[in-house]
Length: 216
Length: 216
Image (tube, rainbow over all chains, first blue to last red; front, side, top):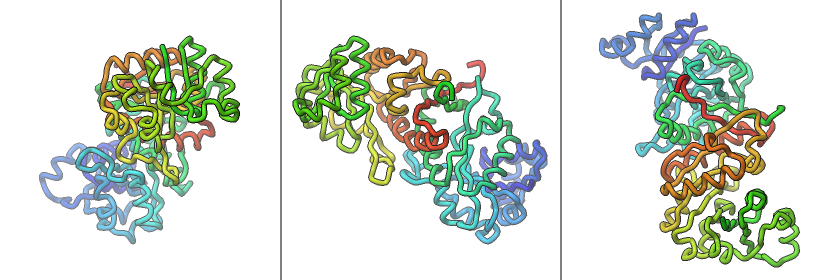
């Protein structure tokens, strides 16, 4: 599958490298694709076979677009990459926006919904936002199984994303489909509890597991 | 221990009954303590030995006050019960506020912090807010162990609340102290993910378990 990732920070690079190792054709969209400093930051991804191109080309050629840009700038970054090229595509949104005080940039709402509203012909799926970057690609680093969530309107798009998540090592039975894109609010707002737990246990490398009623 | 509970809804009644069974002296503060209709709703609690009195008396005589009123009216309900009587007391806050559309009444903030700010001499602890009423008093109803969180400024108050939670059946090693009262934001904002999970699995009777890194 051709995956175009917007956002060349640690999350974008980590996902790009992992999906390249899994055999996908991955490109990172960079605003400075030829700059030596930018390429140095991306050297591990490039060594894994990830291409680096401009954002518009990354989106145009992709089967699946991944938003790994900061949540506060995601809509404008996606628009700059090309709204027309996003039409009909699956877009996996892994972004969360924070304000300057560490609070959520979308209190009471969600970035996932904002992106879906801004690009109504794009099939947005929110996931991976409840775990730290390193856990995203190493779910078996935990002491036991944990749960990962999906939100989105389009069942086929969620099926495609499910495949990409299993390629990262997430067992299918660890994935929980929460429903439509409004449920992205729950995933994003969990960031506040995530930070509290991380502070309490002294690690970002934890998951949460949904524990159902006994006998269910 | 003398426990005074404000809020005679299902949460207040369920907690009152469970703590009475555990041997505590529990009173529910009601604005209509002598009304037959109100007492009928409380019959199970009364049968368990729970007293029913007015809110001011419930607070004045208590060692620990429990706020189980709706989050949107909690501060005024506590003020009406008597700010002076709350001075120095442990207050376990289990409330969450929702607006008319089902969103949080305190987006970007928390009810726990609002109560602590309104009653600075009271030792507020937030807990029990990440689980449904029935699970609050039956943590062993799940398929495995889950995690319950505490937030608050006062270590002694958290110690007292820890005792009350173990009386409800929560093992000590299931409790995670998140830190100061600002971490109540995480517990309260989790309500949005809670509702998404409940819808997805078709039950409110679930917990979440923090899964730490392997070997930790």
